Amino acid sequence: MLCQDLMKSEVECFRSVDSVQEIARRMRDVNVGFVPICDADGRPLGTLTDRDIAIRVCAEDRVAARVRAGEVMTRETVTCRATEDVEKAERLMAEHHKSRIMVVNDEGRLVGVISLSDVAEQDERHAVETLRRVSAREARVH
Image (cartoon, rainbow, N blue to C red; front, side, top):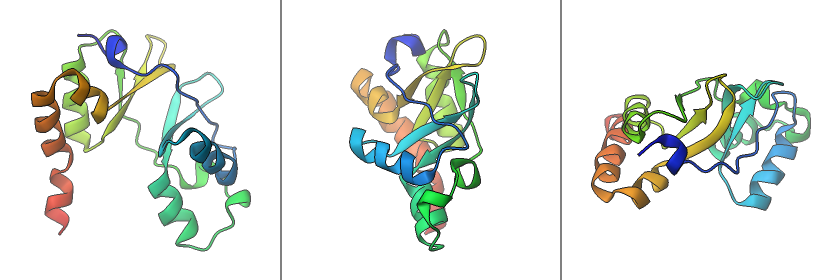
Protein backbone atom coordinates (compact mmCIF):
# COMPACT_ATOMS: atom_id res chain seq x y z
CA MET A 1 0.00 0.00 0.00
CA LEU A 2 1.26 3.48 -0.85
CA CYS A 3 1.36 6.42 1.55
CA GLN A 4 -1.11 8.31 -0.66
CA ASP A 5 -3.63 5.50 -0.12
CA LEU A 6 -3.45 5.77 3.68
CA MET A 7 -2.77 9.45 4.38
CA LYS A 8 -5.30 12.02 5.45
CA SER A 9 -5.24 14.69 2.78
CA GLU A 10 -7.48 17.21 4.55
CA VAL A 11 -4.54 18.84 6.33
CA GLU A 12 -4.33 22.52 7.14
CA CYS A 13 -0.87 24.05 6.96
CA PHE A 14 0.11 27.09 9.02
CA ARG A 15 2.93 29.60 8.56
CA SER A 16 5.78 30.31 10.95
CA VAL A 17 4.53 33.91 11.34
CA ASP A 18 1.06 32.82 12.54
CA SER A 19 0.38 33.43 16.22
CA VAL A 20 0.30 30.45 18.55
CA GLN A 21 -3.05 31.67 19.85
CA GLU A 22 -4.57 31.60 16.35
CA ILE A 23 -3.19 28.12 15.71
CA ALA A 24 -4.27 26.81 19.14
CA ARG A 25 -7.81 28.02 18.55
CA ARG A 26 -7.90 26.26 15.19
CA MET A 27 -6.48 23.09 16.77
CA ARG A 28 -9.26 23.26 19.36
CA ASP A 29 -11.94 23.86 16.74
CA VAL A 30 -10.95 20.87 14.60
CA ASN A 31 -9.87 18.71 17.56
CA VAL A 32 -6.25 18.04 16.59
CA GLY A 33 -3.03 18.13 18.61
CA PHE A 34 -0.63 18.50 15.68
CA VAL A 35 -0.34 20.92 12.76
CA PRO A 36 2.31 21.29 10.06
CA ILE A 37 4.13 24.60 9.71
CA CYS A 38 4.98 25.27 6.06
CA ASP A 39 6.68 27.90 3.94
CA ALA A 40 4.81 29.98 1.36
CA ASP A 41 5.15 27.16 -1.19
CA GLY A 42 3.65 24.53 1.13
CA ARG A 43 6.93 22.83 2.04
CA PRO A 44 7.10 21.64 5.67
CA LEU A 45 9.37 23.64 7.99
CA GLY A 46 8.32 21.92 11.20
CA THR A 47 5.32 21.07 13.33
CA LEU A 48 3.45 22.61 16.22
CA THR A 49 1.84 20.30 18.76
CA ASP A 50 -0.29 20.85 21.80
CA ARG A 51 2.76 19.68 23.78
CA ASP A 52 4.96 22.35 22.16
CA ILE A 53 2.42 24.96 23.21
CA ALA A 54 2.21 23.64 26.78
CA ILE A 55 5.99 23.46 27.27
CA ARG A 56 7.27 26.40 25.23
CA VAL A 57 4.45 28.88 25.73
CA CYS A 58 2.35 28.10 28.81
CA ALA A 59 5.13 26.76 31.04
CA GLU A 60 7.20 29.86 30.27
CA ASP A 61 4.20 32.14 30.89
CA ARG A 62 4.40 33.63 27.40
CA VAL A 63 1.46 35.42 25.78
CA ALA A 64 0.22 33.12 23.01
CA ALA A 65 -1.11 36.02 20.94
CA ARG A 66 2.40 37.50 20.75
CA VAL A 67 4.33 34.27 20.14
CA ARG A 68 4.82 33.19 16.53
CA ALA A 69 4.75 29.53 15.56
CA GLY A 70 8.31 29.76 14.24
CA GLU A 71 9.57 30.62 17.71
CA VAL A 72 8.25 27.49 19.40
CA MET A 73 7.64 24.88 16.70
CA THR A 74 9.50 21.60 16.52
CA ARG A 75 11.91 22.12 13.64
CA GLU A 76 12.51 18.46 12.84
CA THR A 77 10.58 17.51 9.72
CA VAL A 78 10.05 13.83 9.11
CA THR A 79 8.49 13.25 5.72
CA CYS A 80 7.85 10.53 3.20
CA ARG A 81 6.68 10.79 -0.38
CA ALA A 82 3.08 10.06 -1.32
CA THR A 83 4.25 7.43 -3.81
CA GLU A 84 6.36 5.48 -1.30
CA ASP A 85 5.23 2.33 0.44
CA VAL A 86 3.55 2.73 3.83
CA GLU A 87 6.28 0.53 5.33
CA LYS A 88 8.74 3.37 4.76
CA ALA A 89 6.47 5.73 6.71
CA GLU A 90 6.27 3.20 9.55
CA ARG A 91 10.05 2.81 9.54
CA LEU A 92 10.56 6.59 9.68
CA MET A 93 8.02 6.95 12.49
CA ALA A 94 9.86 4.34 14.52
CA GLU A 95 13.32 5.68 13.71
CA HIS A 96 12.42 9.26 14.65
CA HIS A 97 10.02 8.35 17.49
CA LYS A 98 7.09 10.18 15.88
CA SER A 99 3.45 9.15 15.97
CA ARG A 100 2.74 11.24 12.85
CA ILE A 101 4.61 11.75 9.60
CA MET A 102 4.06 14.37 6.94
CA VAL A 103 3.55 13.22 3.35
CA VAL A 104 4.93 15.32 0.51
CA ASN A 105 4.69 15.25 -3.27
CA ASP A 106 7.66 15.11 -5.64
CA GLU A 107 8.16 18.89 -5.25
CA GLY A 108 8.34 18.57 -1.46
CA ARG A 109 4.94 20.19 -0.84
CA LEU A 110 2.73 18.86 1.92
CA VAL A 111 -0.11 16.69 0.62
CA GLY A 112 -1.11 14.74 3.72
CA VAL A 113 -0.32 13.24 7.11
CA ILE A 114 -0.17 9.65 8.29
CA SER A 115 -0.71 8.97 11.97
CA LEU A 116 -0.10 5.85 13.99
CA SER A 117 -3.88 5.41 14.20
CA ASP A 118 -4.02 5.32 10.38
CA VAL A 119 -1.45 2.53 10.44
CA ALA A 120 -3.46 0.68 13.11
CA GLU A 121 -6.60 0.81 11.00
CA GLN A 122 -4.67 -0.70 8.10
CA ASP A 123 -2.77 -3.45 9.94
CA GLU A 124 -2.83 -4.01 13.70
CA ARG A 125 0.36 -6.11 13.76
CA HIS A 126 2.42 -3.41 12.09
CA ALA A 127 0.87 -0.76 14.31
CA VAL A 128 1.80 -2.60 17.51
CA GLU A 129 5.42 -2.97 16.42
CA THR A 130 5.60 0.63 15.19
CA LEU A 131 4.08 1.88 18.46
CA ARG A 132 6.60 -0.17 20.43
CA ARG A 133 9.45 1.41 18.47
CA VAL A 134 7.99 4.95 18.57
CA SER A 135 7.54 4.81 22.34
CA ALA A 136 10.97 3.26 23.02
CA ARG A 137 12.39 6.71 23.84
CA GLU A 138 9.80 7.19 26.60
CA ALA A 139 10.72 3.91 28.27
CA ARG A 140 14.38 4.99 28.43
CA VAL A 141 13.54 8.34 30.03
CA HIS A 142 11.77 6.97 33.12
